[in-house]
Image (cartoon, helix red, strand yellow):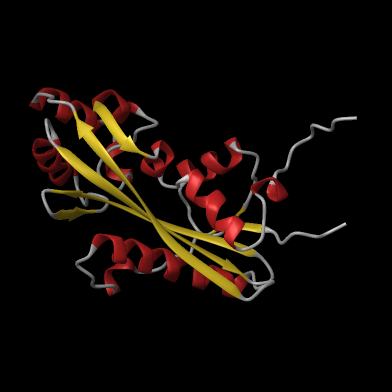
Length: 204
């Protein structure tokens, strides 16, 4: 029987953890505590991949025989890069720009495979079309606190889903982890996603 490495999520994001658990992967969770401000890069696709790599690399040092997944997300609207807002006022100002507009959500993915001494990185992109909501609704949404926890200032899987009119591309990528991209990256490393399923269902 082949023994597969432990799966480690180098992120404190509850949304990413829930996505993995939904598809049968129950990872070890280890937050990297990486200081993102030290990375300066104007290309959003490059930036999220660099940040994902840095986070995965730090955690891989603690779990050298495991498969470590690092991720990072940001939203680009009219050429401006957005991560998590720093304050409620900033979140309100962003939503006033985002409403009746569209943006592209970038999520960088990095996998460090300690057993094979290999690593991969890739980026998922999804276009998001936002609803035309009034200032009262924006303030009420920001007051829930949800936008302050999210790259792009909204959570598709939460109240923010009310204000997304349409998406073009991978749905889970917006939540913080593209499940189809993860499957493809695992395949490149020689794994099947089901190798990491953990459940109590057994077929006779």
